Length: 116
Image (cartoon, rainbow, N blue to C red):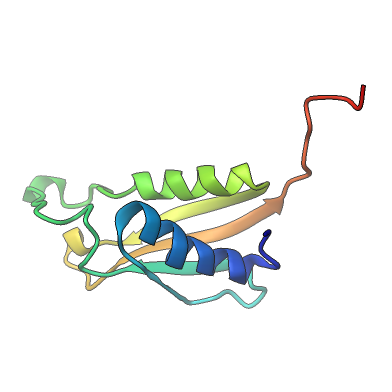
């Protein structure tokens, strides 16, 4: 069924979606005061950074930024427009990969077919 609120949506993304497609579960942290933004944290078990070495001159590359696109696309399919920002990365020397997700709007469902 549909998620009751954005907190439940975040849990499903982290515990179900990432488990289904990457074989890992992340964690949720740093909720905004109005429950419209959160941080999704992925640890060292993220297969997207496994066996990856980034040369020093490319240290700032957002190597897993494709995950932001996946999250945005998946949530648009259920009428939630979000913005995702890549905040921290294990490849940058951080202790975890952090993706900040912010709800922009709940879109109206549009059906291309009439009742004919």
